[in-house]
Length: 440
Ligand code: ASP
Image (tube, rainbow, N blue to C red; front, side):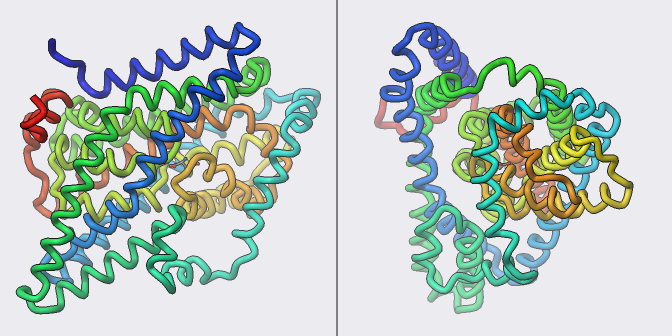
């Protein structure tokens, strides 16, 4: 029998997880059962993905850069990548600001609703505020200082230090370009082979993806707050979702214009990574799959994807920046504040920087939102207003973050003459068989 394509398998896993949890929620023991017996499998799945993120970045980036042959192609690609990332982020924030100013969702929250929401989530806000305070205390050059690790094993030991690992890999790759080719060859061969092994590990992990997302979604459903609070925030959430949908449309459009690849080609190629972003709420956990999809299904040369995507997963978060803009103005509206044009321009700058600084893990965008609020003089207590719907919005903004990285990788590849026709892969099953000839 012909197996379903991977994105369908994942989608079915997600829907089945939701239905399963909704049914079990009707039993007294249901939610505890999901927490004890189903959720751990979701956690194991995410851990397995995160497990390979650091070695993948190291191996693929070092290999990609050492393949470049000279430093000038590296700086050209680096410049294009960063510039495109910043432009797309600014566009995202601007879309968010336009929507929230046009629809004014904050005006629908009256005094009593505000008190109810604030009381429900007051404690959670304190924790978020404290983690943000640590970030705020640092000096203006702290981000630059943090870029350079003092110990590579220390940096690689924490998934929160991706930028340091990227720095090391680029530095190492540059060193390899600068020594005679013959001497660099064994190191290159090593990272080449390491890369292959890790790609194979991703294949194996992805076999479990439908079950992993089943467990993740089931756990989310049983832990979700009451539907009543959800409804109060529906208008705000709808504004964020509208912005995110527009961003996806924007990506497909620029991919179409600049690379002549159709929206269907792009969305079909990247959909498993999108669905995984949706289920895991983590760009970092999704990175291995984003890389594989862009290389094998969208035709981005590995030299480009291995450079553009790890950096993108860490600093390019268009969905997050859009959400931060909408959330900040929504909170201001709910507190009856009118934000001047100047303050809103400030939000463009801070949301862009805050999204760059957000870690690629669940909930990070909300922590950095505190900084946007502080800069614009909006009460931090307002975070409590949006807590109830943050998780579903986190899932969706992560999907956009992942899509944005993939789109930019295609643009950069095109500009470098490194966008190819991908091998015709009909579905994951074929692909798996091709890679595992002995499995049949
Ligand atoms: N979860 C998002 C990501 O990993 C970041 C955020 O919280 O917005 O891309």
